[in-house]
Length: 496
Image (cartoon, rainbow, N blue to C red; front, side, top):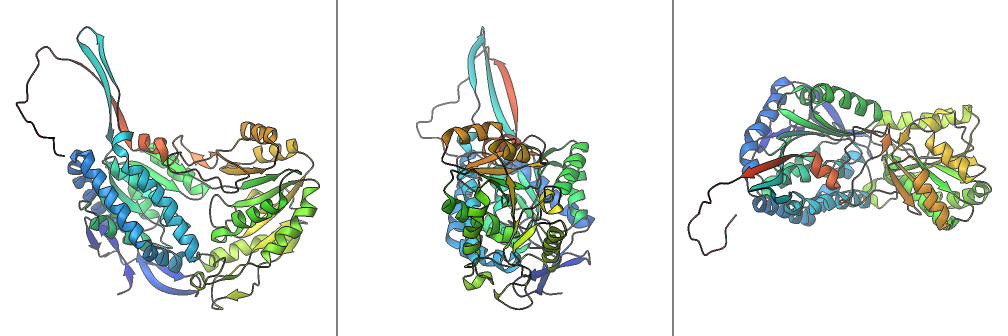
């Protein structure tokens, strides 16, 4: 088959011979546009071997050399991010502006990684004992595996691979089989930036590829973002094989709205956080926790804004695109029926939207559901679509208790003009990322991303200094030199 997304191994396209493929759709058209190869054991081993063989030379490359490659990659990505955005939209469905925003947020981590020499600095203590010095260094792990989700095919991998590569590791990345082309595009950009062959490899596949990375003795770590059941599986099995693991799971994010909040800001924020990327993001606000009497005042404002949203093909200047597959669209839509059966009030039903797009697209319009029982699956489960729930509470304390009782702890926000309430909230709420009048509290690259509870397995979050420490190992050296040595005379600056 000619239109197959293959693998990228050791600096070139690696044509799969597995005989297994999976469809890749254009969600706005509802048609299959290509197939993606699903790796067999031969291809899995080839990708890992390429990374292993490339590691010694890349590990020993100078910090300045690595920094130059990272910086060149940054420049190329800035120049051509429009190309990548079009690829993302064609396979994921998100609107072009959202795809560009995803790339920009990923680029922040690339820029963070440009400063890797400073981030890898150790410490030095002179004469801790007579004639004895102690100092520390940080060194790369080796081959690292990255398993990325469908909802952010560029940004989420960029949470990991810029730091991993800058620190001297080599990478085998397994993208989602739903939208694999972005990773192949990135691999070619790395090559153009001067990255040596084998340092960055793309292994397309399914569970067989995932298990191959987990079980390989040559892969030192696994980084993953996705649903909680898969995150737990990857964490438990990778740990069993002695690997370091970053496993970021699902979410059910709440927005607590106090009566003194600016409801115009709240309504805007609920729309942006609930329906951006068609709700297919782990930082989406899916539950508005309204302290009475806020809900009755807020809902008309949200509805008015929802009526102006245009759902359609992301290449046509619409506000919200389709969902990634027909199966996922149908699953998300099923929660509206569940809400009705559980006694909730469907205020805006997005199951039959008017769209600016082809009839066969995987469409589900923005949906608003009020008075959602906290026992309903609509409340307890991660829907991962454009469904916004309203839960009414009587007080701030009841709202915080509700948030803290949940199984997830990824992101949350409070909307209020009371600084004391906001300070109390950020101290008491059991969630990893918190917004104060900010609906999507994704931290900038030099802080770390990750939640609590069933939203994170393991203790290490993504990017920031936690990311640097994850992709490196520390050494402490105690030394005594009895005789000084001389390196000869050289009046020039040292080069590389």
